[in-house]
Image 1: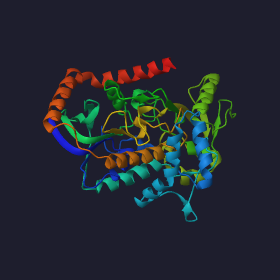
Image 2: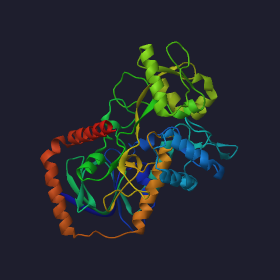
Image 3: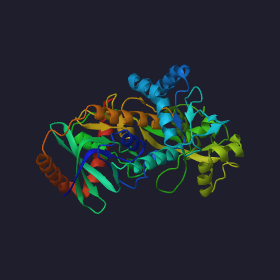
Image 4: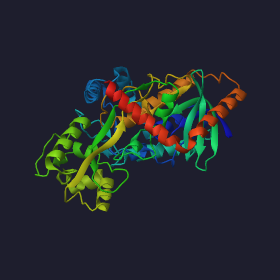
Length: 435
């Protein structure tokens, strides 16, 4: 087993992992690992935008919109932290070169489903790619950060409820012992567990399975969001998301009879229910989305990539309706963390979609995901820095722990991915039935 020692290990190279790395001290060595290619995180796929508190008068409505969408099951403290931190985060993003749409030189705000007013900043229809690529460029300039791709976390190194790093596997099959004083899990969602999902298929919730095995507290893992509108296709693989912003800007939904059947800016879970009802009524595996009402200029300016992708599938959204269908999209539950993104295990933090800080409640408000991920990733980095302490056991003890962990992995290594998948899905069903 190859050994690597670092000060901080970050599992994941999406927006939350990158933002955490940018807020760690430059005198600490940081190692980032990712299961696939560096740019293959769902953060790169986010289309719509990122929320921000417009001004002090916007706080109450932003709070209420988030709580209402989450069916008032949100952790209010976390929501307040996110909203109050939003402008600072946006300013940081701009300092890293992120370019948001502007109108007459000022930031341009759009509105999406369940928002009472426009408060969403965007970059065309590839906001996630714009933000995450600029963060990646900034991280790659840091001499204290190393990124390893095609490295899969298999288990964590734990003794007496303290994390000392992880055991991972390189693409060539080599096992790695990654020893770290602190570990941040930012490994994304669970879309790879589903046939129809907007997520990358390699995001299979491995961190949840590992957390279960080490008795790390999970929270609301049955809270799984379905996106109402993805482009219908008979082809296998990831579903192409048609951004909430499209409907926020005025696109309409129609049944087979060509009539509207729902308010297009309903919360995602409620709109999904209405679409499923209409599909059952029509006897079809999709409903129709009409973007033509937006006009060609708006479509090409605000949604150029959606236009191009639909064109590749044979649809010209400036001239015709497109078939859309709900698909698994976002994971509101995850590894329970506190207001500083700390898990119930010492020296272990979690941020982004793999964590649950309670911001989203039972249903995520559109465009809160990127903001929540960045706010709480930063808090993780600052918190562990402020309370820094070295490992409590010796390098030899950690080496022994790694060998022991590696031996257990080898016993089921050939089907470990399938085992983890089964354990996560089984736990989700157990929690659902317990409600």
